[in-house]
Length: 540
Image (cartoon, rainbow, N blue to C red):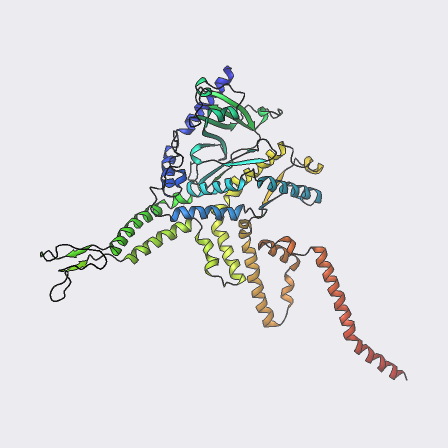
């Protein structure tokens, strides 16, 4: 009992430090949430408890940033983790093992299983993953919790609101500590932790609206015994703690990191990332102020202020349609009532457009308007555009492959392996320690390779000009078309089943060569016949 109390006290001290040391961040995030992501507004203080269904858009004047945030999440999702295709593969780290067909077939089967469980209806990956990217765009951090599915084989995903979770890094800048602060009512606590004796005040509560603060504390297991198969042999220690009564609800461990987190750019010495919305917050605030001015200006233009000469002639003005205003003009027809001049509303619209362009650029919206705005581009021009996108997008989304997706895939493999859902690996792979690497095959990865395809086409165009000038086709002999065509098709996302395999290609070439030889024989037949006749005539 004393050991459990000491464990809880130690964890709560660390939890207090982690939850009380990021006030500056929380103020910044709250300002962003009010203007860009109002669903998260009010969740960033240590004692935050929002009211379900409450209005939270009172600080929003212009919705450009909020709309752009949704599109940013869709863009990153389609670039990195499109649900319509397999966006990664697995392969052996050892070059020799990569060439073994049985090893590669095993990795292919494992990748297929991963996608099957990842996109299963109960897994909730697509929605949670989208939530990660939305949080990344707004706040620069997108936490995800990955664990085994309860009651059935599989994996369960849950996007964690940033206001609920706190992180710590190790000496290499890798997240290895997390505290999630959440609330449960008494019934939920009894369901999740049925073997725990809850404090009297909690156990006697029968109101589902009354919730109690809990913590999930995950940290490196400094007392780890690698020989143990239980939680004491895990890399990370896991504690569930009820704040009221300082009760240890559950103790366990994880062999892999359960909170893979996407982070955007970070300043030196900072743990948390800074997202696009934080970088363009000045533009968002400026746009809101400009929108207020434009609205006032528009009101004055549509419903103008009237100026009248105070000479006692015009007693009252009626703005009803068809009304007659006596004294509105002089006996010479000069207007005695005129609207107050207002500014040029077109200038205001131009100012709005400038700020909106900055916001859309930062949220990657502008990049994906290029192809729709110029639909008559040639194939070479399209490749150039894709190459430019790859260059511009690489710093924004490329880092997610290592920190977020890499740890996500490791966690998924661990969960599936512990459930016995993966096939037995080949003996050669076991001897090599089972080391593997991830090959990303997403649109983003192909966009980064678009430079190769674009350079090839530029080179072919240049060589074609030389061939046309010299009438010598030999420069094309430098190109290895059997290598170029499959890889070029892969870069341009041509489905594999649209291409013929090497055996079929070889057979078609053999058939074509045979037909060409027969045609040569047919073409040469008249000449051979004439030569035979000449020989026969000379012999006579």
